[in-house]
Length: 105
Image 1 (tube, rainbow, N blue to C red):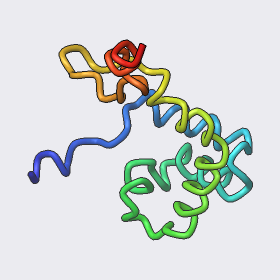
Image 2 (cartoon, rainbow, N blue to C red):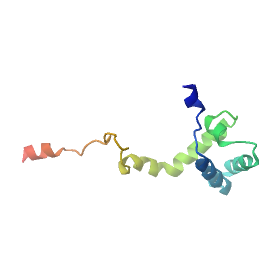
Image 3 (cartoon, rainbow, N blue to C red):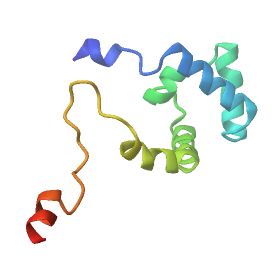
Image 4 (cartoon, helix red, strand yellow):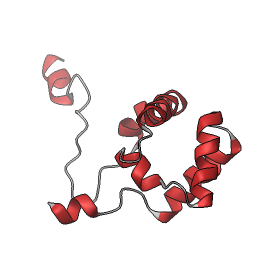
């Protein structure tokens, strides 16, 4: 469990993308300043998402803005994505099932 907790939550590409988005101001002025701190080495994304850096309020605002920005994509993802290889399809079958409609005809 300890090893799993120490595993990074974000890839280097994800950190880079977050820094670029925040630096553009897409996440608000506070996150733009946070991106500067990341680039200057005074802050880092890993501590931020783990909420160990004292930026809990900023993190909550980040989550709120992300929820607003990506709400539609998140809601559609389970419907539009394919199940993982070897995984059973978690989506419910269409209603009514074909066998139900055929038996009624």
